[in-house]
Length: 147
Image 1 (cartoon, helix red, strand yellow):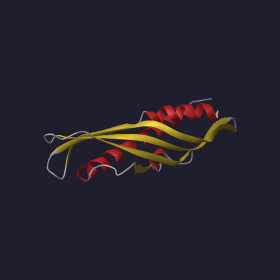
Image 2 (cartoon, rainbow, N blue to C red; image 1 turned 90 degrees about the vertical axis):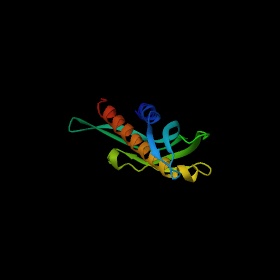
Image 3 (cartoon, rainbow, N blue to C red; image 1 turned 135 degrees about the vertical axis):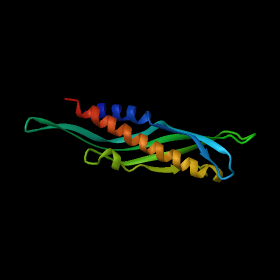
Image 4 (cartoon, rainbow, N blue to C red; image 1 turned 60 degrees about the vertical axis):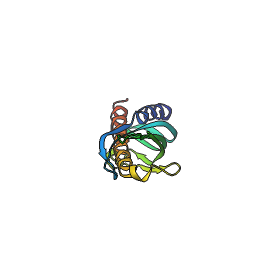
């Protein structure tokens, strides 16, 4: 059961993505941002289905590390697209934690986005966090249908 759950959870998490079509930078120019999970670096834990009074109970306890990329683009003349990498850590993917309460820590690789893009980048990463939570909710629904 654990192998199947790891595969399913990996597939769901890899689909997380977010974007902001237009945001204003501190310079007054507008920008767009998009973020997506590029790789599920690690996922560990276990899962089981137990029968309680002839009803299945779907239990799981996992933690995961995800790599994500963020693309930032300004409409300012001559501006180049900025690519930034981040790591998302999910320390408690548990059946007892509701997906909307899931803790998703983010840490920039390197120096992070340029200061001008910082607010836009943070907003996009927050949307990506919500997308990850939504993917865990979808996984949870699929897992509970498994017999």
